[in-house]
Structure formats: C-alpha cells, structure tokens
Length: 397
Image 1 (tube, rainbow, N blue to C red):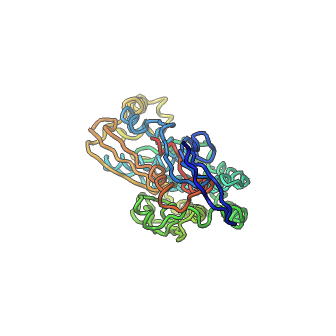
Image 2: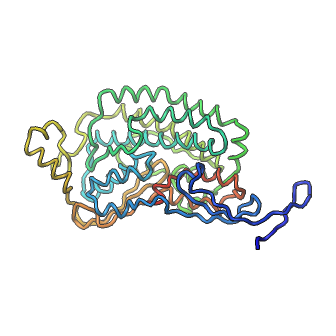
Image 3: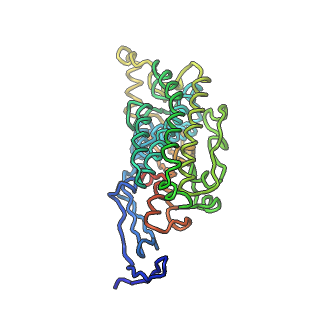
C-alpha cells in the first residue's frame, strides 16, 4: 500500500500526500544525458535518490587495452565531448611521463591555449543550459553563437599527440582568436545582464543546493564545484603542468556554495581563460610542434610521405603498430573544465596499455546531488544537477 502522509499548508490547512516513485530520465533534457534518477517523493519533497548509470556504457577504459597509445586519443575525445582538447592533454601528459619526454615549448603553448578554449566551450554550454533547465531558453541560444567561433569541428578534434600536437597552427588561426578575445568579454557581460538579475533564476538558484567547503572536500569535488564552496584549489596553479607556471591568472572562488555561486564561478573563469589565451599568443615562440623522435612522432612534412619511402614506412609503422612504452605505472592529472581529470596507466612495455583508469570529475561530482545539500524539492534537484555540470560520457566510461 502507498503510504499517505499529512503535510500542512502555510495557512494551516492539512494536505494529504502520497509517497511515490518517479523516474527522472534517462530521456529527459534536464538530466544532461542518459542519467536516470529514481526519486522517492513525498508530494514534491524528495526523500531519496537512487541514481542509475550504464545507459551510455562505451567501455573506454577497457577499449584502451586493445588500442595503441595514438589510437586512444579519439576515445578520450568522447569522455567530456564538449571539451575534447582537455581530455587529449591529460592522456598525452600521462603517456609522456611514462616515456620520460616533454613536448616542445611551442607545442605546450598550443596545448594550453586549446585547453583554455575548451574550458570556454564547456562553460558556455552550462552558462546557457542551467537557465534553460529552469525555464529560460534565450541564454543558451546566445552561448551557442560563441561556441561556434572556436573551431570548425563541433567536437572530437583529436588534436593532441604524444610528444606534441598533430600539426602546427594555420596562418589564419591566431588573428581569428585575437578577434574572439576582443569580442568575448562584452558577450560575457551580455549573459550576466540577461541572467544575473532575473528574479526567477535567482530564486531558483540562490541558497539552493548549498555545499559547504568541508563537505566539498570530503566528497572529492573539484573544479568550479569545489571553488564555489570557498576552497581555493586549482591544479593549474597549485600543481602546474605544461607552461601554466609562466602565465598570470586568478583562481575564481565563491563562498556561498549554492547553484548560483557555481554558475558565477564558470562565468568568471571564462574571463580568466581569455587572459590565459592572450598571454599564450604573446609568449608563444617559434619552433617545432612535436618531438623529433621518429619512433614516436609522425613525419612533420606530410608531403614527404608521398615521395619518401622512409617517411612512408615511419607513418605506416606508427599508424599500424604504434610505439613501445616502458613498463611502469603513472598517474597524471590536469584541471579540466569539470574539475580534476586524471589518467592512471599501467604499461607492460608494449604499444598498448595493460590497464587504464580514468578519474573523471563528473563521476565524482555527482555524489553531491543528494545528501549534503539543502535541495529537497523536485524543482531544486533540477537546479542542483544542472549546476554540477555533469557529462554522462565521462561518468559512464
């Protein structure tokens, strides 16, 4: 029998409610992918959440055992598919640590610039998607306009390579990025004017889904979800990789820990990403864009592949068989748009990893959906889920 409970209306009149189970997702626009939440409701009061994942099981970690290290890059694209350059970078750094090599300085600047463009791309989506989840569609249409300025490829760029990047920047790229950096700060202000004083958006996000700093640390949250609770931690500054220690930027934090603070953190982080991109363009030196190690890197001059037997053999050998990586194990981590993205790899000395494990931030961040926040109503769960900004492809990996 369904248990009937009695609630009180504000004016004191009794209201009978029934305890029911509700499936939210997996086919629901506000679950941000194929996430199924089984909600135990007492009226609109959420008493329990039972999350179900597994509807998008790509088996990335297991597939990697059958792929060479170069062939794994397209798999990493499909983790957080909104920000593929960040996924590529995290994996490349892990393999390079096993090999004991570093990418050339120019390649490091290119990688960082692409990672910050990816951060903007990911934050733009949630900047518009969270208001849309709560009923305001206009912001998402504006945000999509800016995302299309970054690259001609919508997703799955596979731009990184072990030891550098796939190819050098085209001549017209930097002028376009400079134009974007000039335009974008004003566009960010447009989003704020559109949303920040909207009383419906504020009432749905301010004071909702509050996560304390202690709870955020205990849950292992990272990225904007951690910093919005007042924890001043950013891997780019605190454990710098590539050339981040040469760049000047501020780590954005908020104290409130609610849905609105998480939204604001991402908006302000886009401004810092513009600063980082501009510094990369100013400091980027000329030079090679990948290591000069024929057993690891593809031929730089692709035209030589058509007319040189040695270059053709090098290209074919790397494409078909890959390269051996010394036996050992490594964990490498970066500050991805969603938070701490890490790759743990065990190598047995072959061209394919013996084991690979992905520490995906969305998987960990989803722990905060229920239990530590003050979100207890069905409408609040939508706001909290959107503010955590999960991508199910890196949850269900």
